Amino acid sequence: MPYQWLPPQGDTRRLHLWPYRSLPRQGFVIFIAATALLIALPLATVIGSPVLWALLPFLVLTVAAIWIALMRSYKDGQILEDLILSPAGMHLSRRGPREMRADWQANPYWVRVHLHRHGGPVPNYITLRGGPREVEIGAFLSEDERLTLALELSTTLDSLKGQGPRI
Image 1 (cartoon, one colour):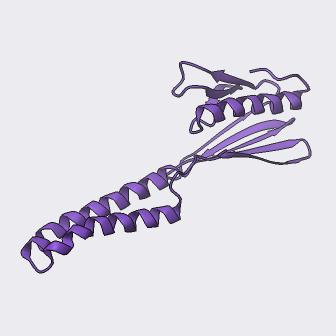
Image 2 (image 1 turned 120 degrees about the vertical axis):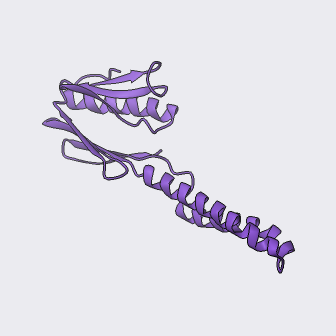
Image 3 (image 1 turned 135 degrees about the horizontal axis):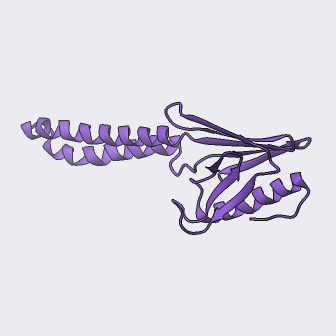
């Protein structure tokens, strides 16, 4: 799962969440090389003719466009959510692409985990409500992962308060 509960430090619990990357960096290199090779393969038949110079700029632009699109996808996927739960306070920080950062703090006693099965931007949308506003968590996870996360968050939060789980 693209989230991890770190080992507890006393009463403090910490959760890291990140989006799943289906194409790792090594796969990126292999994909670009294979694409360039497959695009260049038909050029072998026109080597030595003026047609090569007419086609070559378009093929180079195609590989460059794929490269730029994948690099943009990597940059947009650099999201890390960090949730710190302790009896003294709860802190959620979200670092996103292009130096975007958002922070949220609340008293854990008043925080509730809400699972919006329908009506959210994604199915099984999870929000934390407490303090002056409601924040989302793990919107980039799959439906099943969000269900599991909602139960784990509720259980962990309620154990800090000394209550049974509620979603």
